[in-house]
Image 1 (cartoon, rainbow, N blue to C red):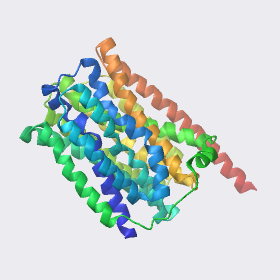
Image 2: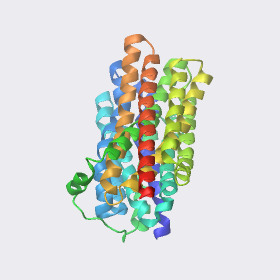
Image 3: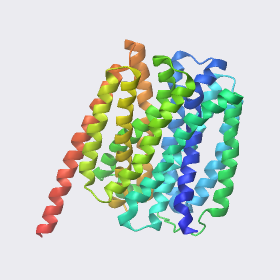
Length: 388
């Protein structure tokens, strides 16, 4: 049973993320049937990120308290209701309401990163969390599959398809989930008090805000942006976005593997340098091929960065892994909420997203400086400890 937890929980994350991005993937089709005001378009795609972010703290805590099996089961049962509601939506208000509760699909991320390290030695935590993070692939599956289903059967039936997926995941977790997972019963407030003054918690939160935030933001932003800016069809936009997600998900495993073997701070500095370079390519607003090259540069950097951050978290916060995983992953989710709104604001104000991408590059360079400073600080501490 214990050996089944890594593949099972990775599959859980794939399914949860598939559901999480239904709206952004189908928006080009939904907007043909439901009037969405221009100033609401970005919000409709961003709202699933809200609940998917803030719930990550309690989900991480309850994963420790109740075990991953119970939290995954409850989450997939809860997701049945917004998915069915969205399949019957007739107004953009319906989309906003249903979209918020799709957030359960994104919140489950903190369950696996809290649960899985219990089954493996510390030396493998980077790789294990990297494999689990491969569950990000769920967003790629939906960005490709949902438009194809919508073309064949209509977007309402495409949404209803996910009800069957959720029922299958409920059954899998009921029968294969670990009922005897070790539990941590320390109250969440006490655990947070133990860590909230630790600067590393907030630096890790900042790093994940940028790396995972960029991943989520581009996942929800690209499909509609590519259709409206470059004039391609919804299915092609879905394929291009799916490729971005696949690269990030696969490279996340590599990032976890590398973080078990190399200096994490230097890896992070390289990650942020790559992200800044990719963002500046996007800011130039070149032709489609070069624009997508910039997107894929960001994808590779995000994937490695995501893997590194969740090697660092259990390294420095062993006893408070649940709430710390929740806080850091919440900040990553929130990092995906704001960029689409900021880019949309620049688009309305200037007629282009170029300055928005420049602002993103600036925020990445701040992270690069912070990672370099932390790396030097940790190196001095190790040299001091060795000298003693």
